[in-house]
Length: 124
Ligand SMILES: [Zn+2]
Image (cartoon, rainbow, N blue to C red; front, side):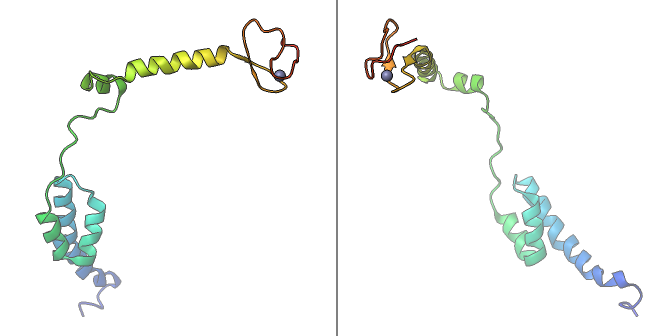
C-alpha cells in the first residue's frame, strides 16, 4: 500500500538518500571552500563515501588578498621593473608610429627622405 498510495512515493527513498548524504556532503564542501554542486552529485552517486571523503579533505585556503588590479599588484611588488618596461614599450610604440614607410616596397623612410632608398619612389 505504501508504494501504490502516490506516484511520487517512489521518490521518498531518493529524498532520504539526498537528505542523509547529498546535503551534508555539499554543506561540508561549502564550509571548506569547495564547489558544492560536484559534492552534491558525489553524494548522489557514492552516498556516505562522498560525505566521508569531503569530510576528511583539507579546507582550501581562503582567497584573502585578491591582487587583481594593477595598483595593488604594484604596491605588493615594489622591486618590479614593470613600470619602467612599460614606459620603454610605450616609447618604442610611439617611435614606430612616427616612422614612415614606402607604400611601394615597405622600406622605412627617414624623416627628411625625399625618395625611397629601396625603390626610388618619391616619398610624400
Ligand atoms: Zn620604396
